[in-house]
Figure 1 (cartoon, helix red, strand yellow):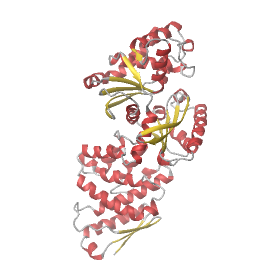
Figure 2 (cartoon, helix red, strand yellow; figure 1 turned 60 degrees about the vertical axis):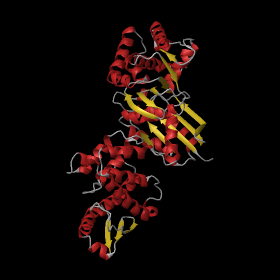
Figure 3 (cartoon, one colour; figure 1 turned 90 degrees about the vertical axis):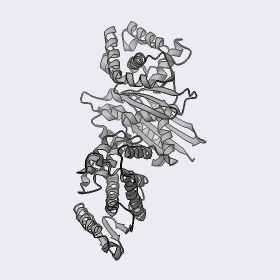
Figure 4 (cartoon, one colour; figure 1 turned 135 degrees about the vertical axis):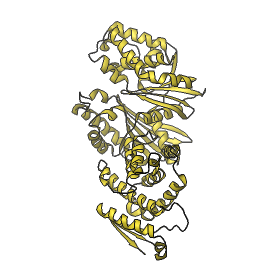
Length: 495
């Protein structure tokens, strides 16, 4: 069946998977699977996922893996959120998980999570009154976004969610007025830096997303606290009920599912803090959130509307990169890439995009200093919030930028799988050749050599006249031979 896409969200409270079909600009959901894993509750005192929790999580992912086993990698995206960002042994978990899923897992930043949440919400709301405030309370983090139509204006991710708030203030299950007050004060403290900026932007509608918001809305409806949505008074009622019963296990709100009971108090408190901080009286709840946002992002990539390319171009423009030269380098790099694509990149469909992005940004570090600008640029790219990229994606891109000149410290790719490391080294070599061949920064008399590769043997062939007319390029190529030789590659220059 064509146009099938799948998104998996490894959240701090639950793991979700949706499979959808894209037809006429809409996503038809074909399948949904949700399991309440509570990954955040499985972190020990050293911030590591316990063996018991790892076993539970992997059992869930084995079931997810069966559902997506027939899908190609370019129509599946699997993301990890706050707990996997925090866990010190997340890499060990991911290695096992990726084997079960048959696909790579991306640990995304809080800002990227917020962007995807907003995309999922904006594609699933019927009313468009202008700017909207979107709130998503997860297990370990809360994302707060102001946007207009499909474009986010400002995004934030705060380290407070329903699981970690419950664990921090009500670990033994006992509910007291003092504890509730402390939890609310903690929420206000986290929100305080945002209040002025968000209020100055303003918004017309407030929309909640994901499981916590849906659960609180269901309680609101079932308890007859409001005909729809969530109200400030409803949150006060729920907190009063929790204080009256005095214990999390005794919370008995109508509409509350048993699987949600252990963490609902933390979610109510976080939402109450947000309502108080931003003077919110009423909030509707969206059916779309992170998973739907991932699907729309995948669809954009398949239709050459890749958010990552937009992010790279904005980043390059922000730091006043010489775009004419970057385009020159990109053009030469693509000509070289095309010649050896079947030899070096047959099974890596995204390699070409990373070559283009690294060419566009390879000089970004010049905004700091010329000396070691490649290292400055690599740091900037690795630490920035580049929309659409996971942290690992950004590290990969940063490595290409750092290695485009001078020494080839290929151990920068050691943390990646052998396949990705090999791709990174090969892209580095092409980018270096493209930069070297465009050093004069003009296109007159430019000649792209014939490039042939055989494993670690590289041959570049020029016309003798062209090479004789470009002694600086010839000298640079001879220096490149030395760099590549130290890295275990052989560069042969033919005329």
